[in-house]
Length: 227
Image 1 (cartoon, rainbow, N blue to C red):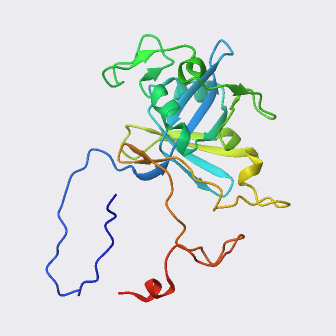
Image 2 (cartoon, rainbow, N blue to C red):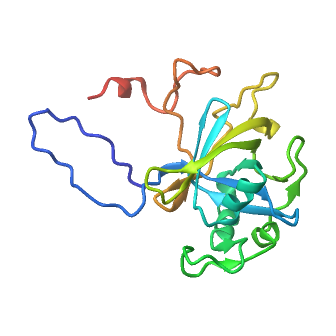
């Protein structure tokens, strides 16, 4: 796969960029599976590619007509299950499904009602500790949370959910032994890159605020000074 690297240009060079109107702006966002509680106390499971963390709050972008949005408005507990690259096929099995019947008119063509999302995705549930919706067994990170604020976004076409994380579960294989830190070298989230699925590439370096610093090994030292 060819990776386009930024080229060194003078500010006086003609602008080489093209203006485009992409249909989506999923420029490499993590994929999570949101488990919520249905009116009959069963579990709903939905893929989501609009999630980002701010401290102990995870902000989610949701369509207003989906089962997840309706569930959270009435029962705000949820689990944010962060998927791994190897789970992309399970995520995709969930993509054309909805927990609402009849299927909302706003859903894409081909979307169909499915009451058993876990079964349809071939995923297993695991009981949560602090919330009623279950966790997704196999997801390396599972965040039990509560939706504290739900409001329309600036376009009025989506909902923004601010979820307070109550408890974090992690696969021990991605945790630095004896600490509460995730080992970045052992953990790779599933990324949704313009509607294609990817994992992370080799490490390039780390932030000065990293709690798990390590020498850079992904590129030769001279590359850091190139350009």
